[in-house]
Image (cartoon, rainbow over the protein chains, first blue to last red):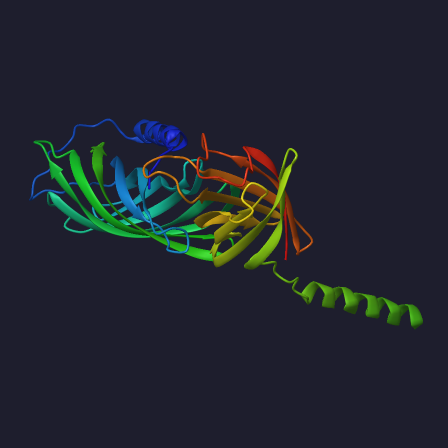
Length: 200
Length: 149
């Protein structure tokens, strides 16, 4: 099984998202994150990117694939933030040279994130999101594509490091679901990435 | 009164027609047919098994047995696990003939076709690997095929 990743569209979307967020963020002096002080304040923002190993719905494939995500959001308070996320998950199963099955799932979701222990350097969180997902299926030269509702629930933690506490490593376990072809597909992903705090 | 009744009857018929689900076509099972490559012709048997859904496609395991003039006492046997895809009227099959040397990409063919009605597949085939040293029935690098149920 070989895994191939296409990510040009998601990268373009992510760059655009990051530019919009950066333009929106007020330029103010940053606070150092300390275990005693709040890491997040209303109006500040966050951008990040992560990679996950994805286990696709067993109706699609038994192979594992890759998931790439770009995300950016804004804090409504120390605990609550909204987040826009663009993600692509793909898996390619080579049956014979020149004959393959491929699943590609592009999802754009709006997440609501609940942060726990927002004043610490380790910030666990839960999120839930809804959006739209396009699933493309290819098999032996035939292909199908359908766009429908997509959902996500996930949990993980950020681990802020550095003197100013503006960068965090992030781990996340996510369950994604998308509608399509009169079915609901559920996929799991376990991943890690980096998050950058923007603004105050 | 009569036009009203007629309209009601027509409406009812249209409504009933909309409720009738068209039978789903399934390739599962044994098919027999023939192939030709230039002046060479022969027969073939295809078996589709292990149907599984893949979105709006169906995926099958496939066994293809080729008979030809250069292998009168035998045949060439090809298989593929989950390597036949069926969507609408299109049938795409990828198979590898037995006897390929380990670690080599040889003996691989694509058989593509269209369903005609629900009992015939008509299409063409191409060798997608560089060679097929195990092929003894002279199906060549490309040709046409038909299979019937």
